[in-house]
Image 1: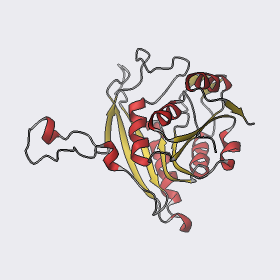
Image 2 (image 1 turned 135 degrees about the vertical axis):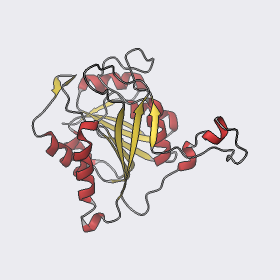
Image 3 (image 1 turned 180 degrees about the horizontal axis):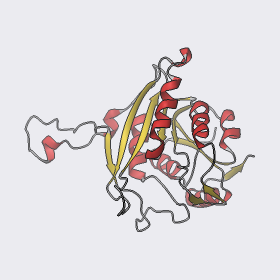
Length: 244
């Protein structure tokens, strides 16, 4: 198998021909009228689409679902419903809150400064690597407490990373949204070791692939837009495979 693949096509047609992954990271469209290449992100029956994606994209040891806060209750219900299946009794679900340090400005209501990310361990063999993501503790940085563990601590389930804005160097202006690379590094380091396979069924701006190249993880991304795939290919040096 190739270490890195960019597949241009419909993820629902492509996914079942892919190998079992150590980790899946899924960031589906938010259904909030954003303009993507050749379509507007607002469709009827979005709740059912989320259900179908969550049900279909689950052949991995660890799965991450990043969703707009408006759909948090739907995704939570879908994932927890899966735990009722006898064949899925080992599923372990945890929610991480991504807190933006650079949220959008609003005047008529509270601005949204967080995004829920659901983590699912699919079986008893699913392995996490907390020592890969240690951070300095408050005992070390704030209180100079001699009881602090010198190597740091595992971060809590609230993660602070700035939203990628148009003025940021890592922004891909040709795509309307993207997760910060630092956030993706933490997810991938936490969920995998070098050489493991990560699949992203919503390739978007290619962040998952770029981070996997940096961290020496294998990666397959699926993206519907030919333009996005070509841009990712130019950045990463990986040829596009077209599968319809």
